Amino acid sequence: MAEIQLKSLAHSYSATPAGAEDYAIRQLDHVWEKGGAYALLGPSGCGKSTMLNIISGLLAPSEGDVLFDGRRVNELSPRERNIAQVFQFPVIYDSMTVFDNLAFPLKNNKVPTSQIKARVHEIAEVLEIGDKLYKKAKNLTADEKQKVSMGRGLVREDVSAIL
Image (tube, rainbow, N blue to C red; front, side, top):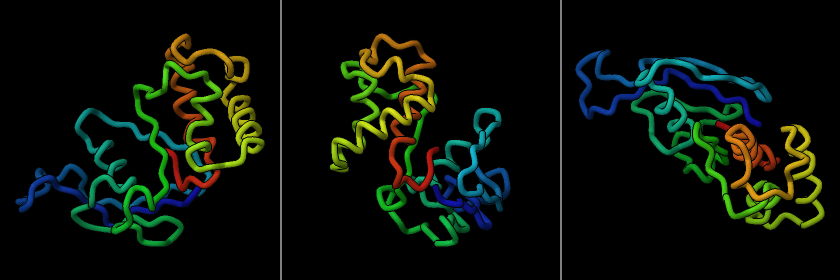
C-alpha cells in the first residue's frame, strides 16, 4: 500500500468557479499513511466520492496534487495508479463461488495457481469467510458479499490503495 498525500487539492465541476460555493472540494491538504485503515465520512454532497475519484484517477483535480509515496500521479491513468475500489453496494459475481470471486483479479494478472490458492485462503481467513469459499456468492448475506468485494482488492499484493 502507498502513502497517499493530497497537496492543496481542490475541485470544481464549474469551468470558471466564482467562489467557494462553486467547489465540491475546497483546498485541502491531507495524508493517509501507508498501511493504515481509514473511513471517509460526511453528509451527501460533501465531496467524498469526488475525492475518491480524484485519488483513483477517474477525475482530474481542478487544483493541487495527488501523490503516492511522494510521487505526483495527477497525469497517471487509473490503471497506472493501481487502485482497487470497493463500493458501498458490493459488486460481485453471483454465479461464481467466493473462491472464484477472490481469485478473479489474480487470474487476470496471470498469477500462478499455487499462489492464487494460498493468497485467497489467507484473505478469506482475515475476512472471516474461509468457511464460505466454495459457496456460490448469490447465497451470501449482504455483509458477506461486502467482505468478498473488499477481499478482491485485498487479495492483490501489488495494489497501491483500496478505496
